[in-house]
Image 1 (cartoon, helix red, strand yellow):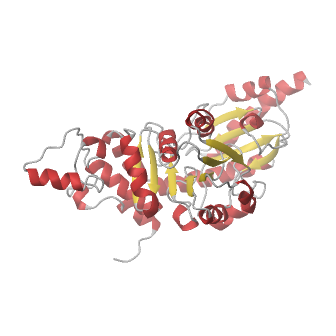
Image 2 (cartoon, one colour):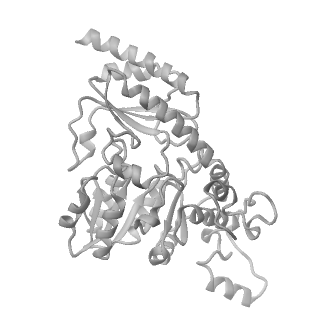
Image 3 (cartoon, one colour):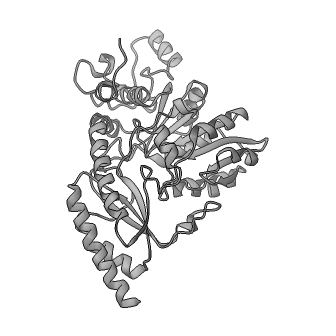
Length: 397
């Protein structure tokens, strides 16, 4: 068979007839107990329980196997473990590769729950974490110790959107026999190919763009040949499993991922360009913009962007930000992102979430997720929001 284009892969991945049973979509197979007709069948299933064989519900059903196969085809690697949320994918991937006395290098712009996990659970286990600047590059060598076992990347970083030099960091880590993990959620399975850039385990909060409709919690971790068996068995022993109904919805979301991301990208670039010209905005933190740290790595390594970015305001206070956000018509306030809807959040002190990569921003940050609404409607909504912000600032000046 010839090489498939990305758009074709998105539609066809995970649709082998052994999973679909000749239907367009794999059926939802719910099971705890798998029954066998003979002792020999049961022995065969036991021997192949880690290789997409029906064995026990926690190992998965054909619904799970189809989605896992699709994620591997899109993202690379050899196997995909499933988890009940993105945070579970992160924490269980790390737990599979650390032990007491180990040392972890964690990017300082990481997703806040990942930081909390390192500072609480890993610390209690006797695993030490050192946070490093996302833009450290070759300087990562100076932080590696004899007991450093994991290098964790997130690119772009949460909120501040720094893009990391993943190939350089991965190459150096492998020189020291470290396992390289990447939170690849921003890129989704299609805008950054982790295994082509040296990553060993690529993690997705499939809750976000894979599902795409803000109605399912799901995590994935795709691993290369070196790491797959250890990740798979550790996750199984930790009791990680997912609902086939949720996996079915993720598979349905996957089919439209390409067209959705194209629209998210088009809308976000238009809104970000408008924001860049606003007098209230000091800086746009969008990987596709030169004003974003690590933009050169985005241009080199990524195939596209999405709807999530941040902007730094020139000034602002709690009252003014509340006035702006409380009155939004099309932007909702809420955690997460990646759905069809637009979201907005304010952060007045991003440095409280950083250890070494503190930035001297002019004012507070707004994180925006640009959804699938009409971009001009979103711009008009933001313009009215700035009017409210400016009105409060004028009164408190």
